Image (cartoon, rainbow, N blue to C red; front, side, top):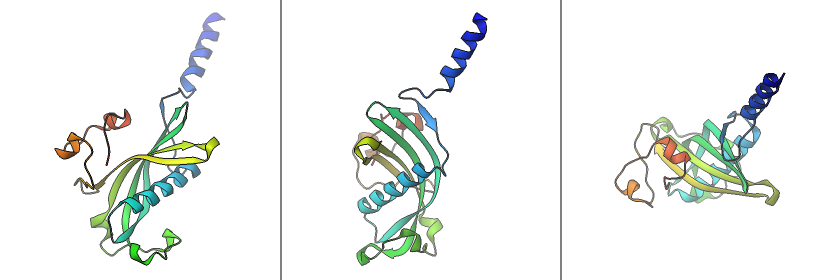
Length: 165
């Protein structure tokens, strides 16, 4: 009987989300899509492009529960549209068509979105974008690794040891 109780407790402990642990989440999840759209909006405002970028796919998603909120780690595929930033008339990114050569300019962006639902606060805290073909895109370098062109492993990225663009 004692063995059965200990097994049940161990099983439940493994199934529970640990504070600070990473949990995968379905890329089609409503919150994932909402926070990916938020991140794309922030990326568009920070990127020095003539054209808006559009989310073509969320490739990976996970979250981390913290005392102060929840971090969403998202890998998003962005492609250039025909909508010019100078027009300022774009209300719905879905209405923007992709450029004819969009595959050549597609970016893969890894972003961290910090969410504090009780404060209704959403912030993109980190991001790093690379051309899908594997070339690193730099807009500004904040650390010596970026200056030297080195990219730390994904585990370093998840452990917040890498300063992103």
